[in-house]
Picture 1: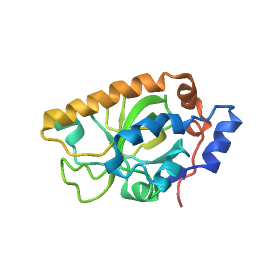
Picture 2: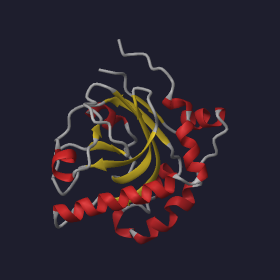
Picture 3: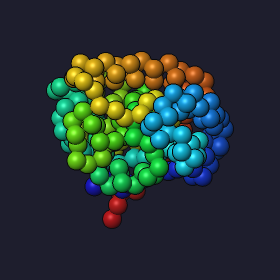
Picture 4: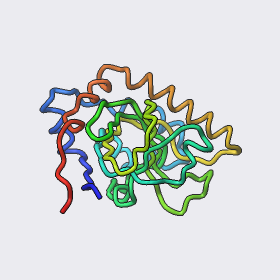
Length: 202
């Protein structure tokens, strides 16, 4: 299995500075959203501090998930193994995120990301599922997925129906497209993390 890599805070910021990529003013990105969702716990100081330190970079081997993304939702996802999920900061809120992703150092695409237990399906294990806005038309299992989590879209929640879940994900995708076109976020697509070669684990 490929080596698990999570770059957060100082290392991520150093990588961005080396490319003169501006950091995102996360207090503006999440401030209003947090006020609208007081019951989610997003207002906690630990969570606000953690979100203020995004972007977060992570990579790992793509593994088989539940197979629901393509079959039930029509929204295929690339799934990280549990070791990557557990390596993410514990204070990272569950919910939907947006950012950039690539596979095996290939082209970088916009993506939306789900972090959590997927309450609609009552998952037993926490998962990290990435939907890249590109049609690969091939099996990606065993390849290395790299992601840059740029921002937070909404808290995790359950849904009354499969249709309402799909509608929420579609709305996430459209929102992510617009946010990632903003100049400061678009430049993160060029972060050196996406082209660096990684040594396999021994």
